[in-house]
Length: 276
Image (cartoon, rainbow, N blue to C red; front, top):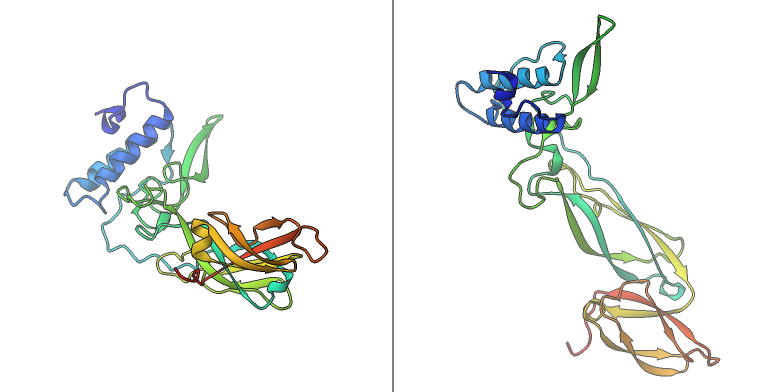
């Protein structure tokens, strides 16, 4: 069969179509995934066809992989997460609830660090190629065009991250506001580690700002409502908009001691509204 027939692409297929077809065929016949006795031979045919259609041959020739028990991936510590928020200066020594949103590694498939060994580079992430220049064969190393240098192809059946290796996460965390200084370090509240590795840390910068510290139960901040608040000009029923966050400011007209406007700085807490 011709290289086009091996990969199942038409004669005029472009590089992107050839690469996608090679990836599909290589996954189909990869000895780590296909127990068929002819898998190794068919896999090598796919590699040879791909190299031929790409206009170069591997140097040295790619050897067919031997089916062995795959070693476990090394554990890796997760990345740290940095964020900042502001509270009233009078909130020193108290706690605030923060919603931390970030892209995290998919725990269903362990992100892009597990999967089938890339058939294009056999896990190295690099490809050695021979190119001819002025009738001289030159060997060079390039990043693998099949896996993009990762050395692995992500699982093709993960419905949690749709093969991206990343999912969105949103967690509520309690941050103690320091009495002095503006930095808080919270261990193991960052991104998930790889292959069971330790989670990263959460680094929080706290900005202290003038204003009235207003403690708001998390359930009220989420759905909205009213809370009792004592101000220098007397008590009021303060309306809290739905979806309020720690650090959000509300203007209280004429509620300062001198009759001017007062800035209220919301600080979410773990408590619940009384009577709920």
